[in-house]
Length: 160
Image (cartoon, rainbow, N blue to C red):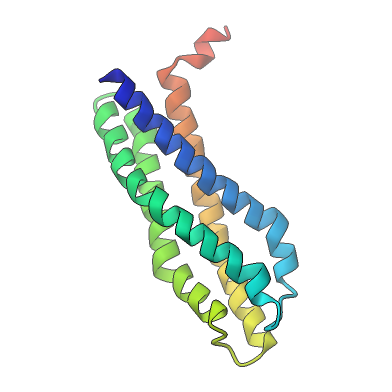
């Protein structure tokens, strides 16, 4: 049973690492170039990456919900329930923002549902602002997962 719980924790760590990594790449490397996107190059630089990310996370995230619930259940009654709950709430918040608000903007941008490049830039700025929320929440979620694993493994004590 312990090895299943370890695999569960490692899966959530994998998913949260992919999520936070994607958000950090967006914020620090892609946003600067996306401020100058135009109708004729938006699909190449925005459409292709967002479709690929959506496809990937559509598989990974639902399993993270189950994994996060197992983390909370496993840590119930210990102080480690705090980072476990943060992990579960984090993936829920990331999904609500992503599916509820960002995906509709993705669809508009990829579908060319804007009148000109100025409106495209406004949509992209809104998209970036919303993804900044996911940047911070995914960072908190990842840090909470690392906190849980470090505490569970007593890693700090092993360095003393």
